[in-house]
Image 1 (tube, rainbow, N blue to C red):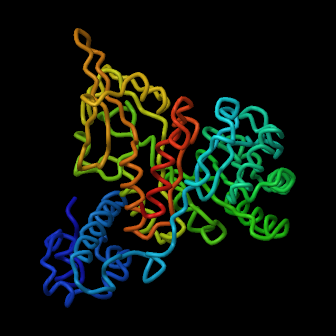
Image 2 (spheres, helix red, strand yellow; image 1 turned 90 degrees about the horizontal axis):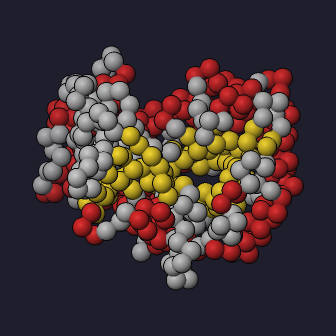
Length: 436
């Protein structure tokens, strides 16, 4: 659906994309409040009654407005968004990297490139419905915790512990209930304090609308308990797009809100093959609905348009690789297609070859196109590479976001590589964050 009329002719031009590439001369004279508050401008300009159309309009509007402001020669318009002034250029984005307890014997803590991370997140303690914690299933043993905490602190880095994980929602939901919440909070904070972690990372998947009230209360109570337990203990959250509305209630209690902008596609009804973690939609749409295909950019701007603070938001980078069987690239039919996930390390060693490497410029996404002669089982391999890490860090800075998460360091660990080059994705993130 095209954007609707705004209040001024300039807003109309912005919404319609007429000034997406204006000449710098004169653009500065038209710049000003719109560039300093693009979220408000686009919210006022997009008033479609249907929510999805309204969100699409706002995302398009903000992209065009950013292009307009970048082309302006007025200093206040070079970096629109929540991050303004000197803080935009001097604050180093966070690189919060997940390290799984169940991979710790394969990749010891001594192999982590701590120079490239700001925060390490040890994964994971799994909630039980009664508010107690399972620290064994994902390898979060006391010995593993001790090794990680010692290594991180020796390197001068903070290390948090995750509570939750994929499919943790049902048990999490029961533990959040009022009659069990105090026990749940006490156990979570005790894990942090007793094992020497620097904070707690919440990863409830999924968070459903019926969970919002209990989740909000839980975040507030955990924040208060951490404040009581020790100075400077952190509270972060890894979230999916459907958690946006509850985050509006608790954003001030969280130090980082990291959006899992990956696993964005699958062989589902009405879909086509698509990148796993694209930065942009590249103008691609679903054949069935005409709606844009998913992207990190659309999700971020959805969160920003809702009013979440840019400086507390992070986007995701994933070392897990999506391998589509029966397709050779994005945008193809899913008929007869299946999807599996493999580690970056495995794909690099078995499928990667320079003649297979492709770059999809619109979505800013890398992939491999693998033709298996004589069979219908070609492969479309959607993955993140070092260039993707640099592009996403640039996106973080351009949009005034807080940083990135990497899931996870072990999947991209190359044990046979030379010292200092055994985790190329993490190294690329560290270099990009430092401005390299």
